[in-house]
Image 1 (cartoon, rainbow, N blue to C red):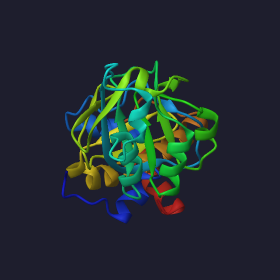
Image 2: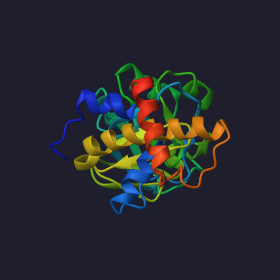
Image 3: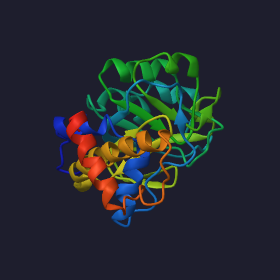
Image 4: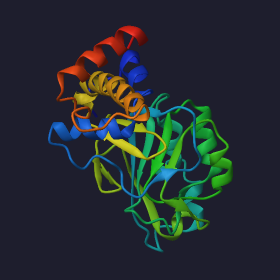
Length: 241
């Protein structure tokens, strides 16, 4: 696990930026594949999901290892993940992009939320999605699925590097989720990405105002005309941004 701890000031910035801005900032650094594919919000939330990754890896279930009785085991990795994911972190589950069976349901996710987790992401399914969607905590998955995880998935490893929606996720990486989906920020880049995206969104808000007022995008976005740079400086002074 990384030694990085997400500072409050960085978290506050990331709560206000879009996954699109994060994707662009990471692309500038050569990172092209940080958007978790195939997952969507279970229900819309008014604020972003932001937190470091606490990971759980599933492998294909084998019938002799995954009878319903394994849930009686106090050390079952799925249950342990729910009870040990730190407050303010995001539980990220690798289900090999297979949503035919659930990786968790509303009882476990409710417990996770009450323990103070910042969110949950799975590239597999969730069961009881209405209950999960009613929680204040953001949740992302690849689809609703009634069958228990034991039918297709065996929970195996905690806090190891995983693949979630074709993205490498390392324990401690910083996840940002909004209505579009979830971005994964390598931990060592989180502070500078937060700063850059805050500035980027300020500029894009200015551009959007100009476009709504009838401005053409050429020379404005990106701003290659000096007059637009002056307008942006005046806009920042007026708005305090």
